[in-house]
Figure 1: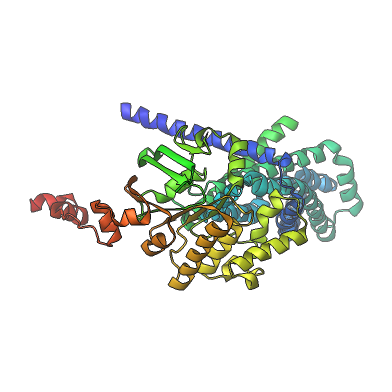
Figure 2 (figure 1 turned 60 degrees about the vertical axis):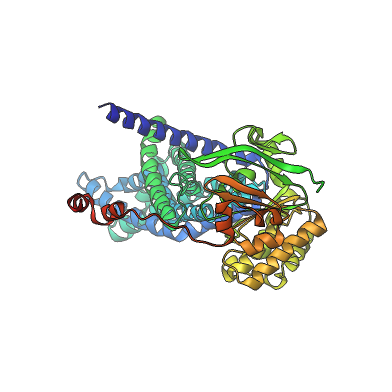
Length: 261
Length: 270
């Protein structure tokens, strides 16, 4: 019994230490915004990687999500004779919920995993140690540009996802199922208010911080706890980063929605 | 020899996950000298190096740099100390996403306000020094092991450091490249007056370049002195290391059988 309590206590302390280290990592990452070196070009490079290269995959996901929403929404609304509300349904679903969540999940899968693996490889190859030995703050030099790029890209990708999704819903609802184009578009225009857009943007900013924080943290400490720096540790860190980021994004979505509604 | 100790290690102990790996290490590193730390693999050389460059936290009053306590350095003091260092890691630790020239330019871009053209020329000078002038545009993955190590050294020298730490410079290199690196290390000491600390287990290289040798074993210092003093050492373990004699393993038949066959067999065997 004593041994059980001891191991439970040790595991709790271990988890608390991890949480403390994660918290400090976030502080250092944010502090890096005001610390040298200059980050303009490295942020641009990261915007290209996180944002531009995610354009196609987000557009593809958004188009099909909008089309499915149009299809499902039409058959549900037609039961009540309210097909004219299809535009409102598709737009609100996308702008409030699906746009930010889908964009964040797709960026996590495409860019977050790559970011974690890149930093993990730098860790096991002593490149992060080399940065420290050159008196270069690895948080400011490596991590902060990714955070800034994420904060720029995710709201823009979310807005793009919303627009493409609404167009996908239009394609199915209006062109295939015969909903009036005027009803669809005026539904979008009349139902969406600034608060909905604001909610979506706040979520996308929060998801950007979560995704970059978790993915860079996992890469930064790949193998550190095991004291074993090999490719297996990078693989494990990448899997953990994607899973934890995705779960955190979904959980944070509920919390932010319940606060902002 | 008239050299003052730039770094003084005074009773360093180190642990990994509760396991002690360094035991009361004491020695001085004289300035403008080459100090070679050598010993068998796993004896704690690299851990000692990580303490000296501030990558592993040191308790107060265990390492003194210019009379200042490394264990009490705050963030700013540690940054200032590291600006005086150049470090060549065992793997070279080049940034894979950059060319060799860009790698060398990193510390110059971060710590100086030099123009891009000046930085390009300075990187070229360092590459030339290491015989890599034609490889500036290459990615690290396109270089051989020896070239990567030399490129890592070029980056370590980019800021003209006062103290140079080199981890296993000759390991995995052919004898000609290894001899070239040794010669370069000697030139850096003679021409620039650098204080150089080399960690290695290559005997030939160690005796060729060292002004002072430190022999480590199982986390302790076995012997320290000039190459001639080390050669004259009567310590059994030092002699074994210098004469490249393998350990004579004590054979524990019961334990061996227990490990490969499982406890049940051992019990029946008894």
